[in-house]
Length: 210
Image (cartoon, rainbow, N blue to C red; front, top):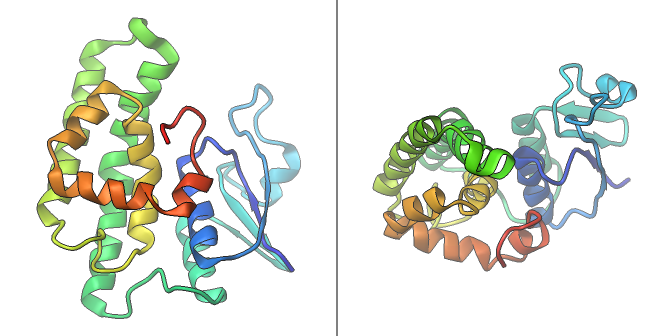
């Protein structure tokens, strides 16, 4: 039975889950769920995710929510290239990078810069955008400092790369994000490698440059 991924195409975390499914070569269906709709998520969706967030996954009788659980399940449950290193050092580095992305990059880059620019345009609070950009720049600088292999956790793609792609994609739709990436040559090279992957092209956000 094909797994079903629930969530909106615009979501960073839905895209991370989609990337995992595509990288593993898993045929799947997707059901659009917009948690920001005027009436909120559909009432029946709360049975899938009691906190009303996205994504959620259904695979046969098994139902999951929370991106971290979903992407690890996808990697463990289906054949295909491994998305988690077996080596404990590289696995720890992957988990550390995911934590950094979740806790220090997502909110300032996606919400503090991209959403502020895209939703409010010239009316956004420039001081708040600048403060968010400074936090995002610091986070990208830390990732750049530690990036000594082709991918974020070593020589092969992992879940860390799949978490980072959607966040960077939104950031690069802003002048601030493009300036940040230009300051990071290793991360810029990583981004070029990731953009060349079919999974990234297939899951591209609306408005994202090819």
